Image 1: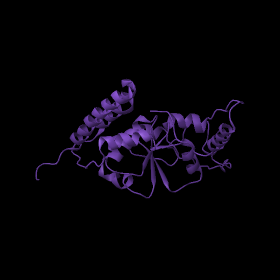
Image 2 (image 1 turned 120 degrees about the vertical axis):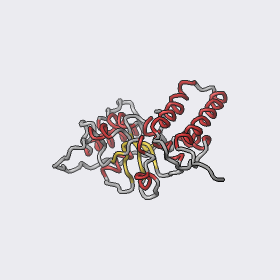
Image 3 (image 1 turned 60 degrees about the horizontal axis):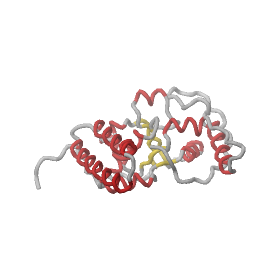
Image 4 (image 1 turned 180 degrees about the vertical axis):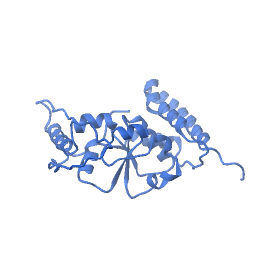
Length: 238
């Protein structure tokens, strides 16, 4: 049938209301606390709507149930140890995308990251970056809420090769750049993880938070990394 195309914001609002309805059903089924569900889904989706540019018309390909189902699996998260290992090894198969504002990105960023503010995700000039199957895109922000907003938008569009840095920059600082030695009674796997984080942090300039966008003229030899511990499924966070 003919007629005017539905604006992007209106489409997203329809999906938001459908997701909110599904969440209310889940609330009754699992007796979850309303504030927790609000923080996990409703607030982030509301922020996405506020950030969506006007007059964009890209069709959505996932239903609310499908999006919630994928979010519940937490398979969108990539552990900071994995990202650190790929950076140090100069793995060409991934790309870090900082979804914070340009001002925040220019103050500091993870080495090698590019900047696509979440408010610009639907711009046509980024379609080829976000909708492709060559590189693994890893979104990050200060925490994980903004990065998850970016992931939700791209998944709603049917893009498949986008992920989220678990814990964001805040956890990156603590886990990779300034790891804490585990207690003497901790299991061996915790010490293995600590050794890896310590060597990765040294390779990435640990103790300096993150790389600034100012040019760094000298490059020092990178210390050898310990073998990365076996990956476990991500847990916790919002």
